[in-house]
Length: 352
Ligand code: NAD
Ligand code: IPM
Ligand code: MN
Figure 1 (cartoon, rainbow, N blue to C red):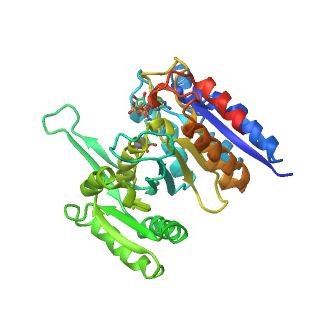
Figure 2: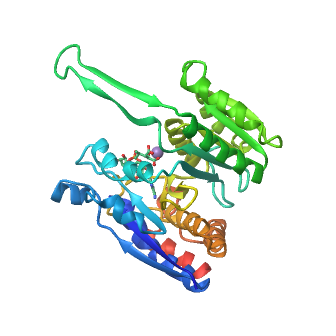
């Protein structure tokens, strides 16, 4: 029997709520499919920062490196600026473990009402491959002349050939395994250096994948088309910032932030990958026990798939689909219901 060591970082706000709620589901899945899950929970986050001045210990990454995978709830707290908390915990893990593929599926499940008129279950099903280690999130820049009228801020984007090629290639591979359609999202009309370089790389890599049909969209048009014709997309590939923005649109057109899962994947086994809902700490609903736990459940499904437990991954994913298709099942408020977080997980456990 395989056993997996998973580092769990509940984090802030609704992060601990959805992590705690889904813990029994994870144990059920392991038991049902005969594998072991050993979780180690780290109390890293903004409470720790307020208490001890750091989001995680200095050797935080070294400690995480030992694990087979990481599960994270959310990071962000109304009392501390977001750049402090996110640069103290979430972003260093993505970058420090070279998790260059941020994989974010958007699926309109049966039984979910899209805010878009006329769409029903199964009509929307795409996945965004977001570059996750450089681009607009590179830590290149600074502030000068603080306090003077000529105060200046520089924030440079960084696009390397290796970094661009590897995310583009991963997206082509995904498209070849799916419907064979890839949309590359850029802003080449305005950003004539980085984005034209990105286009060149897409052109080069496309030669390796003759079966994949390639479409290019400017990011403003892509934002529009994710609303106008979301059914037309299969795999999208985008830079760090564009992928971030487009996946919130993807979450919303498929029903809710509360349903959107993600994986920060380092292909290969040099480092652990990290799975987390796309949503944040949702301070507006934190502490009320009403957060939708399904984005977390689906993220656990992605983690199971990543470690090779495909049957458990399918069972959790299908359980969520089954629950959402059942009009009498409990739903949280983001989906128009009045059930709490725990009731949704209890119902899901019954379905497994
Ligand atoms: P958010 O995703 O936390 O919330 C956006 C909206 O969606 C809110 O109205 C919230 O109530 C709702 N929502 C989100 N998740 C939900 C769920 N599971 N169930 C029901 N409703 C849900 O985004 P925000 O408000 O822009 O950010 C809040 C904080 O989280 C900030 O500090 C931000 O920096 C941080 N953040 C962290 C992550 C992360 O840890 N991966 C992601 C996004 C934002
Ligand atoms: C996400 C979040 C993060 C990001 C923030 C909190 C830094 O929005 O995971 O989508 O931009 O990647
Ligand atoms: Mn985001």
